[in-house]
Amino acid sequence: MALSDHVVRFAVSPFGAALDVYGVRYTGHSLVSLLFAWTYGSPYNRPLLLETTGARTGKRRRAVLPYFPAGESIAIVGSRGGMPHDPNWVHNLRAEPQVGIWIDRERRAVQARVASGEERAALWTEICERAPVYISYQKRATTREIPVVILEDEAAA
Image (cartoon, rainbow, N blue to C red; front, top):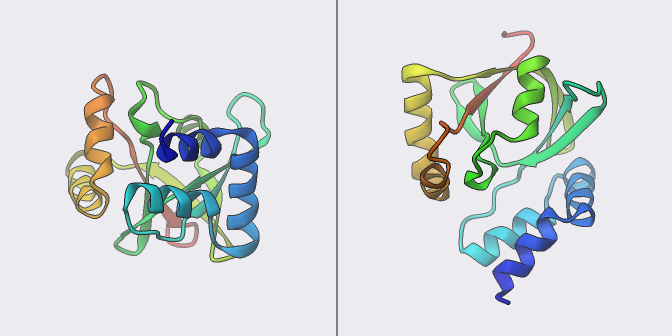
């Protein structure tokens, strides 16, 4: 088994996910993202910690995600590695768009919305230039358009 397979298995394990959440929340860094970037030769950028409310359960859910600038806002991508369905966090924020994010150990309240049309197309092009892995994810996810989510400060939204 290749090292990249081990890294992916660790990243998706319950322990790896918990370690990732803890790392981003308390240090601003993600060991799992760093390992993933190192393994696949991509640049390491600090991720954000997204806190949503479960659409069915009402419980707090967390996900560690890379983020990209989108003007005055932030963009995140619901790729789920090119799987045929959107990640659970996308479903959760569609039900409750007021979410919290942690960036560099600071919490911010933001309003989430899924980009569409020309706005999404422009952001998608920009994101794929910075992180070409999303192109291969979109090819795998042939049955769905990968959502690009805009996170805007609640005061600005």
